[in-house]
Image (cartoon, rainbow, N blue to C red; front, side, top):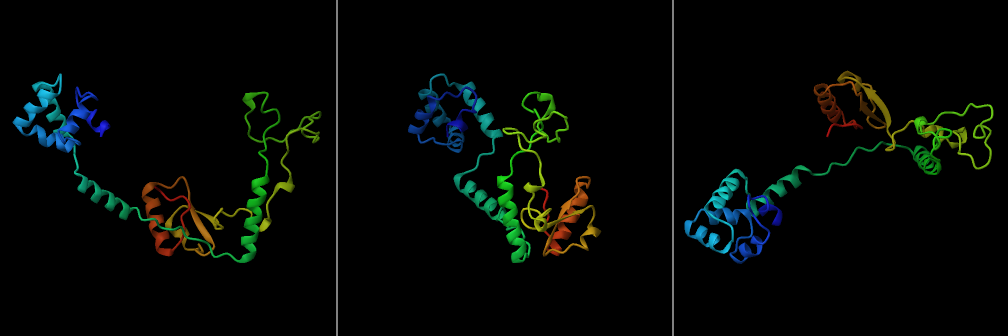
Length: 220
């Protein structure tokens, strides 16, 4: 309530309590009150510093505002709720073996350290992006104690789950509608290329919905 009224020109916070005593608790109530000349006189008599000019400014401001009644607000909220009904994402049809490998991959990923470039902490210009240490005297390359971990084959996940989307789908890059023909919706999902324009993206998404194919990078 306070935020609504404070947008009016010359409105003071002390007016809120006074207007509440006059049963004016919303901008809609105030707009209706200002349409009655007798009620306007009562408002000016109880609000210090409010005169005809201020009343005219309030009328002009309220006229430009789109004020909804509480019932209308409830109707709008109900419509938005109905429109935003949640639709569950499609899931792949995976056998127990692949599900087990995905679970192992998640467990390995959670334990995998953050690999950072040698001496990233010493020179900010190097950045943190991984680079293999090559120095002949590099203690990190020789895996001395208390040195940061290096990328090693032992940190990899199961081969069977490698490259799969976290949902379990195998990703297929598409550039146009025709490339959807060879996609298996049971185990594959599409990712639309970044070079595809909006118009073509819409066509691809509509066609994918018809075929029951999941789009991993859907618009909106």
